[in-house]
Image 1 (cartoon, rainbow, N blue to C red):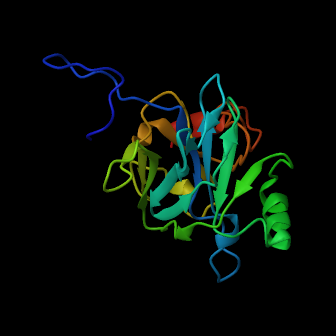
Image 2 (cartoon, rainbow, N blue to C red):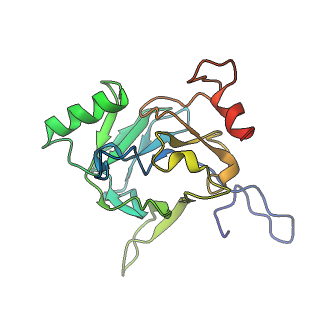
Length: 219
């Protein structure tokens, strides 16, 4: 992996990868199918501002240059988007501004909090066979273009070492540690979707005394 480093380390051991402030924290790429049809309505990507200060998703000096998602799905965040410290954003495949009915079904189906920010639509698809999601930040423009910096990439898959339970069995991929490197399956586990709120590795969905995280580790 060739990623941003947390510090310069020329002629030394590489520093840890730079993580944040904006990170991918949940990916619901294959919800339970709707009969014989794919349930694209409930697909989403969640992002977290893992910082103690608000984060503008536009370049302050060039506000039309904005953070965006690329890879499996492509989405450019609206100009002026300001994400509160520890705030979360959901990106979906439909337009929540023009399709209130679909937004209502999405919120009801996944128990999405009423105050959760839902944005869309993206273009592309979250491929059930695995795909790459990339988070890009605009760099200061030069005379030819607006360069973009890869801030984070997550390349998920429905097979080992990624958890198969997120592939149509009702779970989503949820990040364990928002401050740790994201493109590593060891930092993700499957659990009941929690769009708009923090994942809880101690949750016990089936009430048997073992957390979802412990059950996944135990196979």
